[in-house]
Image (cartoon, rainbow, N blue to C red; front, side, top):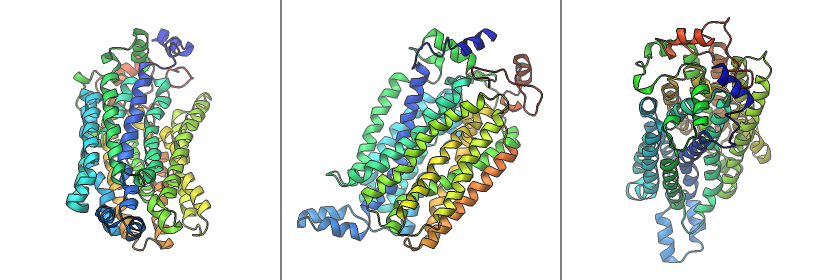
Length: 501
């Protein structure tokens, strides 16, 4: 163990190759999350292109009678309530497969689970325009529910994969590579969907292009991915040894021999319950903005679809850039040995929640004629939430490396109940989309959730491995390795690479 730690410090393993097999896995996960989020977001912008009598009038002005009839077939008049049902329906299926997905990935591996899920979702994405044409908005809701079912395992499986592939001293960077894919997919969809809708393919092209990209990813994943380093055929012995001996500060159980999931201990753990609450409140605020930005920008600031899609992608571009800035800042703070991992997690989570809380409140009072200030505040609200990647979003692995996938499944399932309720709440609050005071109420509710969730995480959140992570062996193994136990303030972790575990 000491020899391995010395090799980590000197970089003998880690720096032999600039890009190792472990980095390839994370790059593939980056594009997996890119597709997953692009498929979630596509409807929020496509709705602007496919609905509204003003759109039909403008389109028909330059068409002959036969072309006009074809175009009208592709335009729909939806009420705000119907739109809210369509936007939220994805989450009705998404929450169902979270916990089962985490368990399957944890027990049997993430590779096949992600591959099957994304193939199914790619097919459903291709079928979206046909479902709307044949069955109306109700049929589209059914397709979105099924898409949610196929994507439920994405986050739990990614967490499970990271627990197997990520050395402890690289966890922040590798996790950031994976999860910034969500921002990239959002950026690409919001920035390009308007142009696709205005092309010869029309708004259905948004779904066709996304579905085709999914099949390209599946082929690359099948060739280059593996659930664990031990299963990968192209990994070098040096990299395999490096990962095996440094991927976790705790004891990794053999998936085939893992103890039953300690459900009782998990649901009576205050650190886990605070993590559950902060994840829920975060997702309310985040998905309120994600699904409503195109509509808000159109109705309040009269920005057309091209401008709206480009401006809507700006916050997520900033979020992706700030993700790597916060990783660098975290490393700087970790090099200061007086700053604990717990402080690090809570500091970044506070930055990612309470600054957006303040900017959301300010957003509610931006005059309608001041679109520039609105864009600045939206960008700040969404972009700076990237700090949570160093906060609650990696806390599952802190608490339990062995059950990280299951923990993510639990919290993400609960959090996405909030994600599904958020568009419905907007539909109930915003009866007149041009009414600024109604949108102000939406932003105030999101700000309140940001405040409460982070407050509980700061008070009750922890970063030490919980005893229930390896119930039969954690005390013996942790004592032998000199690792901290849950609730033990006297023992310090073995420093790895940068002076922190």
